[in-house]
Image (tube, rainbow, N blue to C red; front, side):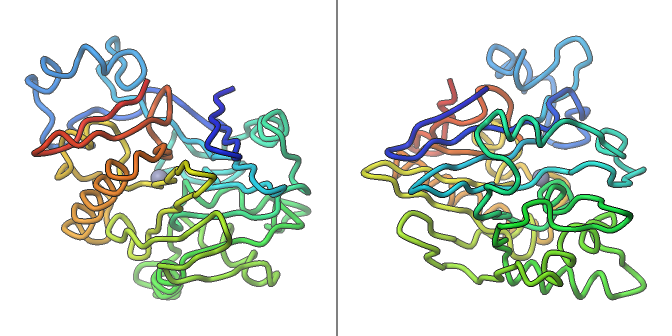
Length: 292
Ligand SMILES: [Zn+2]
């Protein structure tokens, strides 16, 4: 298990999937032979699979333990969600909750669930199927969602031309939590408690946020999908294909990279491969990842 210590906080990675999933050019049209020549020495084996030529991405949650609280950050894809258009994540049946327990939390012990945004691969475990209904997986938790993201997807979901939003996961993984009265919708910047601050970083989704942790003199930033791959640290203008606003996504990426570099915070993305978290260094005209 991958675990990090930040001041008084313990942060464990809880894996859902990790593998070679995308042809590089399908994710990043800017990818070419020069990219591999320049970055090949660090890309394989954790961020690129040389045998298939595919980029490797992880889907995981972070379990944050601080001040006696157990907080789940982002909630992966979840089990039994029908996503025929995304074969890698279609009808998963994985022992994620066993892995979460091994990392230190049973579902009833989770105090808070926090989603950086409401894309299908960040809300999945919010709910689970019980007797044919989607019910909150973490019965004692408050769930923190971004209000602008919620508003955006509620409108999209209700529009017959576009809905159901996010492969149906807005109805399966977000609305049941709101209907159960367990959701807190927040608009950043917002200080949640002594340790956690919610900062807007829109663009990948309309209301995407990041979570900044202060623990003693140390900091960590849960960046969600501000970047999906370490190549985007070298090339902050490289966008993941799916964005609500491409220019806003680039601007948010640069400003969060700046924040990570200037604070020296431990940076915890949602999809970057092993060692899964690290630091960002400013290089004068850009940034360089220091992961492992
Ligand atoms: Zn994602």
